[in-house]
Image (cartoon, rainbow, N blue to C red; front, top):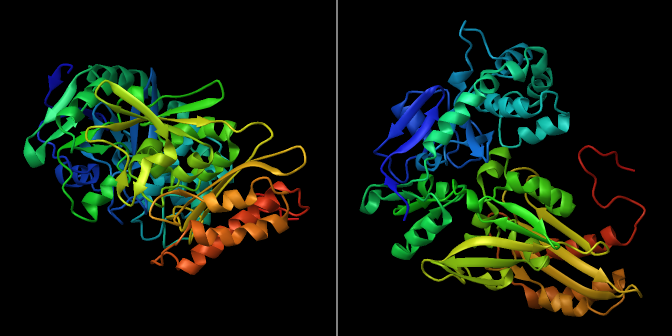
Length: 492
C-alpha cells in the first residue's frame, strides 16, 4: 500500500478545502447546501434525472484540466478528491454583473419559476466553454439531462445560441485561472491513498489500481463506486448502506482507452463521455447508442466498466459488447483472468466474479470492414430513459449472400443480458432474406421469456425484439427508404 492520508482535498469555487469527516454516503449536493449554504444548486429528483443539481467538476486528465457537468445529487463527496467543484454562485462577476450564460437566459426569457435554471445555466456553461458557437444539435444534446416543466425549451435554446455575443470563453475566469487550478490540483493529487472512518463510516480512495487490488483482498465485500450513477440511487432512493466504500473514479490507470491490432481496450473507469469519440469513430452505431444513455451529466459520470460490473439485465452496453464478442479482464490481487463477456453474467444479481475480484478492462474486437453491426434501444421517451429492450446485431455475409456468422444479444429480455442463440442458429448458413428472418423469428420464443413490469408488457418486449431483427434486415439490405430518420435529417 502506498502512503495514506486521512482527508479529502478539493477546490470549491475559489477555495481550497480539506475534509476529515466525510461519510461514505454523503453526497456533493448535501455538502453544498447544508454545510456550505450554496443553495443555488437544487434538489429535484435525487436520482440524476432532472439536472436541477448540475455543477461542474474539473478533473485532471494527464496534464489537461477537463470540466464536465455532473449530478451533485448522486455524486459522492469522497469521489471528488483532487477535483475542482464549480457551482452557480461562482459565475457572479466581481462587479456583481451576470455571467454571459445567465444574461442570455434573462434576455431570451429562458426561465419562469427558476427552480431548474441554475442547473440549465451550468450545463450551458460547460457547453460554452468547450464549444462557443454550438449547433442546435449540440445544444439539445447538452440539455438532454435537464428537465424544465415551465418554458418549453425554445427560449433556452435561443439563449444558448446567443451566449457568445455576451462574452468570450477565453476571458472567462475558468480559462484565465486554468494554470493556477492545474497546479493546485496536481499538488492535491500527491499519490497517497485516502482512508477515513471505521465500520459503517469507512471509505477508501485508492491512489492506484494496485492499491485497489490490495484493498479488495483485505475487504472483499466493499462497495466499489466508479461513476455512482447507480450506487447513488442505492443511497438516495433505497437508503442502503454502502460502507466500506471504495471510490475508484480517480484511478488514472482505469481511465485509459486504446486501439491495437483491431481491438479496443477500455479501462473499467472510462466514462461514456471519454469513450464516445473513439467508439463513434471505430464503431459508429455504438457512438449513437451512447448518445441515448442518460444526459451529459450521467455520461460524464457513468462508466462502461461499472455498467458491466453492475450486472443489470437492462444495462445498455453489455448487449452490443456481447454481440461484438468482447472479453473481460478480471483482477484479484496480482492475478488476472480473461473471460468472454457473455460468461460474466450468470443469473439475476449474480456475476462470474470471485470475492475481492474486480473488472479491470473490457476488450472489444472491431467489426471487419464488410461486417454489419447495429444496436438499437427501445424506451418510453427517446432521451434520458431506461431501456425497455435493447437489441444488438453483428453479422458477416458470405460471397453468396448467406449468413456466414451472426451474433444477436438483447437486454431487457431475460434476467441477464443474453444472446439469442436459437435465432442465430436459425439464421446461420441461410440466405439473408426477409423470408429467412421471418422463419427465424419463432426461435425467439425459445431464447427469451421476458417479464411484464412498469416499463412494458412481456408481449410488447417480445414483439419489439422481433421487430428489431426485421429492422436489422432492412438496414442491411439496401432498401430505398430510410430505416431510421434522425432528428436533424429530412425524411424522404
